[in-house]
Image (tube, rainbow, N blue to C red; front, side):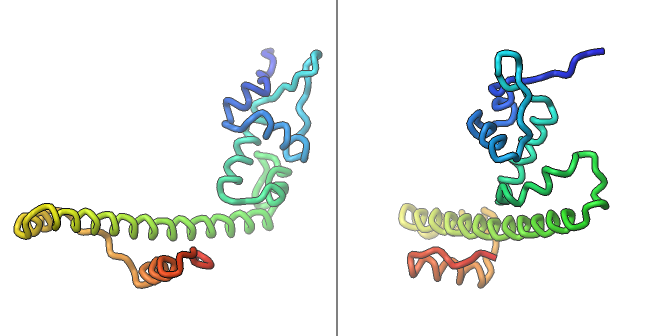
Length: 168
């Protein structure tokens, strides 16, 4: 029988992209179980620990707080989701919020693309004759349309110099 592979904290940090200090912090606040230790006192981690750290990292990237992660981390990876309907509903709701944020950010990207295209054409107008610019405009794809909501979003924030109160 082969012994289970273990990793040092440095190896674990390299594999997960999470700093050694952060891994220690996750242990301290009990998001991760206390690591086993070698005879010399050095922490050792297993693949299961690495998977848990990756899950924490993924949930953190979605904006979930460390406290809200606790219930998800308490459930084993091979558990039946049907046994945890509240957690399933919570993660679905969180997912919907993320999808909404992605859609909102895509609108921002589209708006920026449109502004960049306008800026390029303005520069073309000043550099070249009107006829050449007209030929260029006909040959290039048009920018994506921007909704009135997007326009109002940017025009309000641009006029006041403040970001909008909320992005939905």
